[in-house]
Image (tube, rainbow, N blue to C red):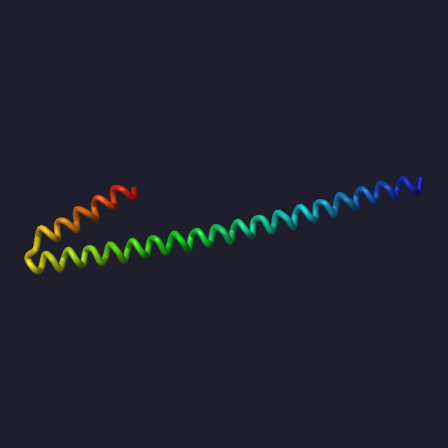
Length: 89
């Protein structure tokens, strides 16, 4: 009878160790997923900033051409920007 109780306790202890290891794995897994998501978000934000600054430069160029009376050059830049925007969507 005593050996039977020890076997049951050993099995229960093994189950607890298994569940503890599984929980630790899941915590690590989700921490890694969160870190990966943060890295991807930072990359996306950098891309958005790059596009934003590029757009700002293009508009400034178009405005400068328009001020100089070079309307064709200004319109060309604006059309090109519009075309790129359509392709990115």
